[in-house]
Length: 216
Image (tube, rainbow, N blue to C red; front, side, top):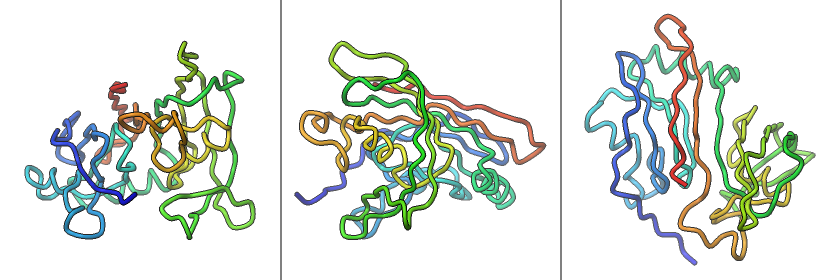
């Protein structure tokens, strides 16, 4: 089945804006940056440029993932924030709904990941060529419908990390078009949301935490 990009009309919600940074809540289904081809030009940063022409990219969220993103409004802020992400000084927490009942209540996935070239953009676990990837999880509750709500804390930032790590546990994220199958895939969106982002402000270094409640 060929993929057709159909982004939502909802504009990204502004959570915070000042002279250095712009923090938004990205809707599910909207690319962070332009994809290949004119049909994938609509994206978060293009929409933000209409109001903030100086906006600069710091990090990305998958198209299907919603939640908190930070952008820079100056080159200094872009460098400062980029280093925080690179050195893992930022703290990120995601909410996800998983297929099945995950146990125990807490744990860590430590499995190296690399792109699955014949099936890209899919990623997969590879102990020989994969890059280190770690994710902490905490079960928030088991739902009556046989699913699990979890909080995920990625300690690294590999592509599709949370999605592949949950699949490796045997509990794919609901609505995942790449890694869920059967009934677990039959949801209106990927049930993954970047709930909180903690960082240091580029001007002065004050710690700041930004949050957005999951819409599911």
